[in-house]
Length: 271
Length: 271
Image 1: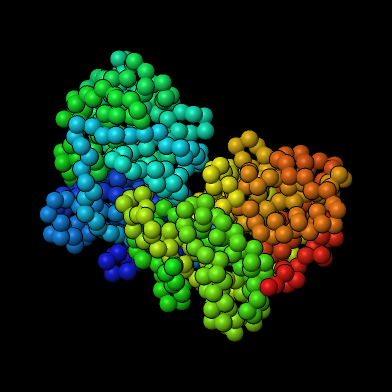
Image 2 (image 1 turned 90 degrees about the vertical axis):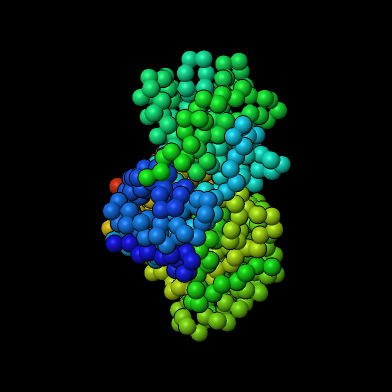
């Protein structure tokens, strides 16, 4: 049983471990009325990654909370909204060490949609902040997000995203988006084991592309893959924004292929 | 100007970035009455590391808060207490990206002292959780502490600490302590650039040892350094516990040198 807190009624207890240590996870779900984009995948990921951290929560409990949240806030937003779930291990413990059988806290909030990215393509750059992915936490949307915060401070002057590299020099992901590259030989994206966050839009889209018989290769991405002649388009994936083509990367124009954007708009993925 | 919150009156706002992303820092200070162990070093570190994250806070402001906290709580604890400061970048922002000129939040709490470790030495083991240190955040006591949480879950059956290794296989630190090894040739400790948290007790002690003309080498520590014949004693450093000798590491007894423990007790470092 989790302890539910509505953000419009208050915050978590002062000794919550989410604040103290980032000991928890979060999800942000794009909502339209009472429906959510890829909602079941968001909840599946949250339950799965919570288990990796030893936090016990059930899919049924989360679904029930989302239904309550949808009723609570759907009428407050005309043009869609964002539902945010912050799940923490709970309050207390002895320093870093959690107590056994802690009761998780779930903080639920609603915000308005961010501005839509330009459908004709956005501007991105390379981040100067390296991305450090702990192998135990690869792909997990945990509350430990200082890398992304520091990189997001580089966003200015119309930049939609900065792309972060790992210590081996491979491009991994944006601060809030996964990468998908179109090449002459098919689609390329970095493997989950290298990712800070394995997005649900990425997961959904790779399944659709493979269903259509297209080639999808999961391998490390080098800078030359994006800036060389093989690049037929770079896409940023995120379940709130959908599939966003990059038209300019640092000081270079990229080809913009609109085929993907037209097949995937978050509106089509409401549940 | 920071926004001060006393933990016995409430928590931080629901949209605080410390909870959302671990976007902040903390300090835990051992207190005796209204005095704190190495208090000025704690505050210096907090101001310095906040600046590395782009969080603006002044030493004077923090000192004033600590004086208020000491007055508030000193009489509530007979045998010492722990003052905890959690400093966050503030509430809000657009996703990971902070707004300009955010007002930091400071959450201040008091807890009782943890049990004292056995002065004759404690038991430690090697952690199975690798320690991942981001080069931009090396040594910073940030709120991103999932590595330490997952390692601390291994603490049981009288274990005082588990020692974490980095991806190169070098021993770096405990979940809450820095390492100091006594060898025939002098003292050895891993360099700050490799540390998750550069403790104030470590800093103070290295200065004292060097003042006494002893050899202190900062270099990576291999497992063989601790388990081989050169090891004359392993110490765990922490400003709450002081200098704690390890008498048993995994399945091996270590020599216990009491010389260091007698020269440093946290009580002697009250300010």
